[in-house]
Image (cartoon, rainbow, N blue to C red; front, side, top):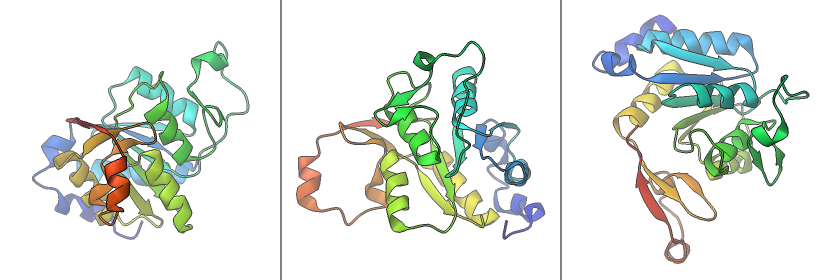
Length: 206
């Protein structure tokens, strides 16, 4: 983290009561990162935080809890063995293979597209290391709301969270894409391609 976590509360004094009601799910395979993020979120005012180290844990929590926001790392632990009593048909799957996947982008794609997804409209913030633009594009195409580069700046994380909470984007669903309206982030879309894209707009109110 680039900013001291004890200073983050200064950035959201008016939103603390609102953030206290938001249920957050953190996914990361690094326990130290999980702890750092959890400390930052609590400093911001979040009170209910769930954590997971892999995609299966994440979707299990999403099935059991009313999660309002997901923060996931690009790298997630692959599942080598399903827990006792869990068969493949009970696990989200995509055309690329059985869920849980090995990275956060595939996890988000599964949440958005699978007919058995527990929460296809949940806002998602993706955290990733320095990476290629193609990976960023893949994450956005998967349906993430925001992308943060490591090392995570606590003030930037705060701003992104407040933006999601206070200004939820319209949700787009089409054959090729399901996720928040990307036009605010990608204003330079080709006009002809936009006309070809027939979409249904759903307002996600949290």
